[in-house]
Image (cartoon, rainbow, N blue to C red; front, side, top):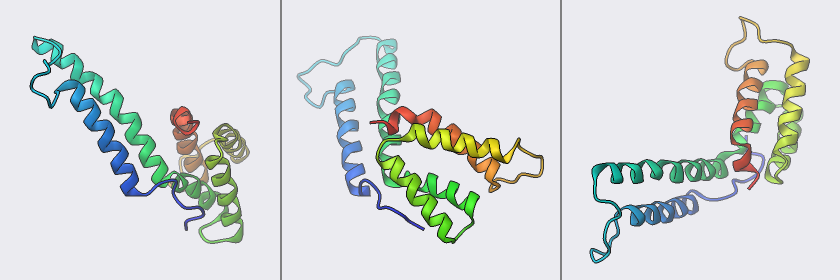
Length: 150
């Protein structure tokens, strides 16, 4: 069930990530052998390598979210309204519209309200139970909210 198209194609995401990766790699290991590498010791290179991950991971997550961020809100809609109902589609479209228009804080507040209405987690809640789906997605959106706000 796909409500809105992804923000970008896989090819566009790959191209952006490859450009970023190449830029970061050029910073660490310049392709031009006339340019000296920064650092002289293993520790110097290790510290530069460590900085590579923080540069790449957020970009990777952003690209992946742009490909399929609606899958997250779709899972919430299905958990609360059922797999294939008109209410599921309506809720999913509403949440996606909020997401695509940068209103992640509204999605988080709404999910917290729904979670409160459902009550505390129960030992019998499985991974697809609405309480569990809301808990996971609240955490996801809170963790990556800054990424979605771009």
